[in-house]
Image (tube, rainbow, N blue to C red):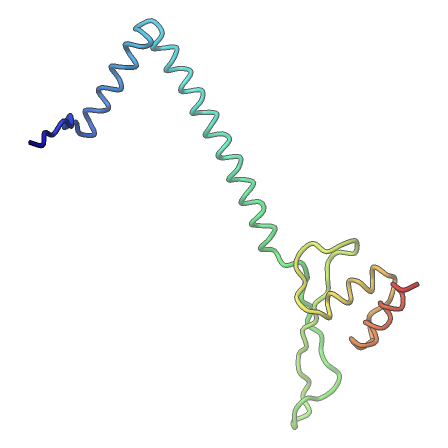
Amino acid sequence: MITDLSLQIGGSEWVVIILLAVFLLFGAKRLPQVSRSLGRVLGEYQRARNTVQEEITKVQRTVNTPPFKLDETKSTQPTNAGGTTSTEVKAETTTSDGITGPVVSEREKLEIVARALEIEPRGKSTAELKQLISSKINL
């Protein structure tokens, strides 16, 4: 014979049982103090949670901003049969001291390293930049 010894207590009955247990443990005199303490703890938790959320949004804003600005410059050479010039987009980093975000291309990375080594990257090909950087580092 299998007997079911469960108490058949639902969710709302547990709330009443917990409230009665708290009342019996702390008594009528200490219950307001416990309530205030619990309120303070919950308030501190809310403040800490809001602070963390603000920090996360600050980091997300800085990550979403591009580390370079795009300048449109006109090309001086015609690109099609009509002789019209095309628009060329050139990326320039906005920082002079270091990298503030991910680099877009290998060329941009080479230009940043070249500037750090006091090499002027304008007018030089990628192969020339690589050779100048490696010769400067080997010194």
